[in-house]
Image: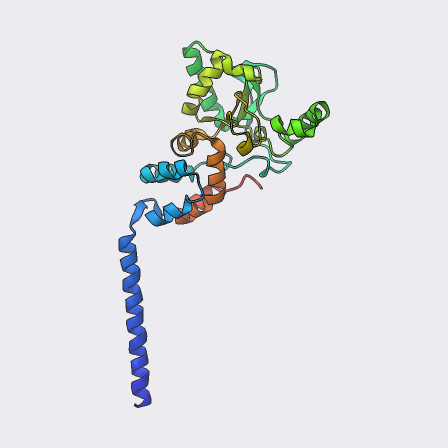
Length: 287
């Protein structure tokens, strides 16, 4: 066999192999269509990405994958503070502070003290929720809102001196790990367990999610969240966030924010609007 013939056969073999691989790839894609038009994700890939979740969460997602991915598509357009994970293991920089803080005494709200501040971004929801509660004959009292790193440090140390560090860690965040530093978290009413027995406490538990507010530390989840049950502590995660939380994450904020922390980049990379989403919604809040 001549060198020319050998060379020709090699080229023919490589070409046929390439065509075979291409055909196989096309066949695989044909067998694994997209689950949602905004994501280049197959059913098998979706199942794999949620495999680290509890069975109830996996079941909820697989029962309505279209709706789940539609909400995730909207979540990619949210500002980074909305679903950022802030807990005992994931903190904020000491110098982090919202740039759009406003004084609550400038609005028609019931305040427990002066100098309360919140991010302007959540004020439309605050005012709409307050208005709705008043329409139902319920007055919401705002007791604690934005706290700087330094303020939280002083507060935490005062609790440590009073109760000891182990007990203080159950109800007070160490500096840099408080959701209050985001400027989107609120303590209502008496800031005691008894708040749950008040009209305001019951109203918020039933209705706050409609306005994008999520109970951060629900009853029976201290091992997961790191904090005792706080019926008075709500965080604004937007209505996209609360829908995701209620429909797919058992109504538990920690489940949602941990999932988003681990997998947000995957969904951003698989989004058909990848460049726009990555530019508009970084995954961290100055961390």
